[in-house]
Length: 65
Image (tube, rainbow, N blue to C red):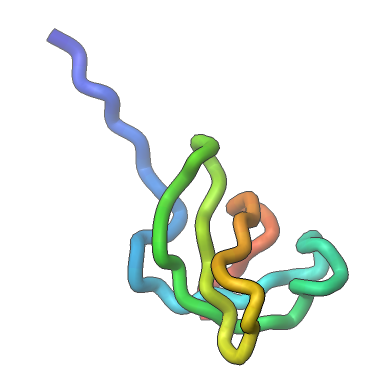
């Protein structure tokens, strides 16, 4: 039996910063990863002070903070 082994770049609870590859309104913002998905490389991030709710960004748009 095969198990799917996927190494995630971030875990729920990690602090991240949106880098220069992120959409302009997210670039430079700092937040908390609150979920993984819905896409394989996508993360739901609640950015500090952002009242819009959770933003969904791809892993290459985020750096560990």
